[in-house]
Image (cartoon, rainbow, N blue to C red; front, side, top):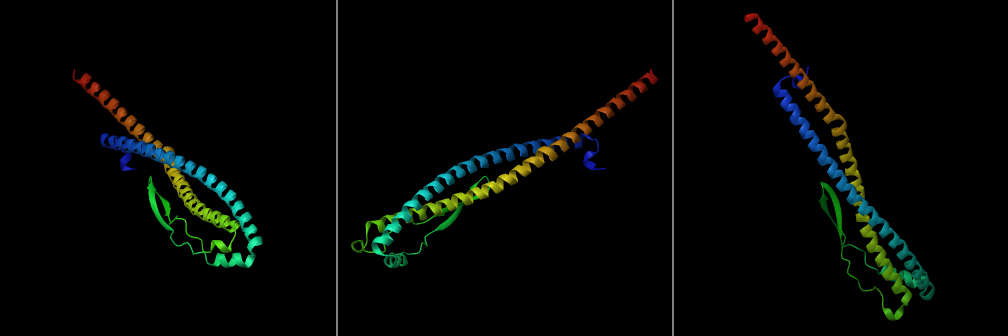
Length: 204
């Protein structure tokens, strides 16, 4: 028999304390889950907005690129593209939301000077360049939002699992243990009371 289940006042106090802690743990885990869900819903909305803007910007960028290819020639546009500097300023840090590490992406978003001379190109190439830079900015932002959403979803699942374990296993177990010990102690007190009454009657 489990020593903690032996019907003593000490075990009853311990069982009640464990039940109280389990209930507090469930409330905290439930609050954490709800906070993370709210954060996740906000990120999902952000991701949808960014994806919609990327689609629109891509459409503008490709239309301008096609026009530039026709006006300047594919080889001339390809030469310009080869001179575009590689993006190497991206830096990833993290912040914590209820113990969940969320990526923070930082990079140099300053508009860079074009890698070509204006006099030798057309406006269509400028539009394509600006649009593709915007797509890059949005893609970096989207990657951070989607990664954050993934991390939050994983932690919501963990919090839900722990909350369910507390609600369906731990709390009922300590409730049953508290009730069993209380009933056993009450039964002992009744037996003791009856025994004392018998002894008193015998001596009177």
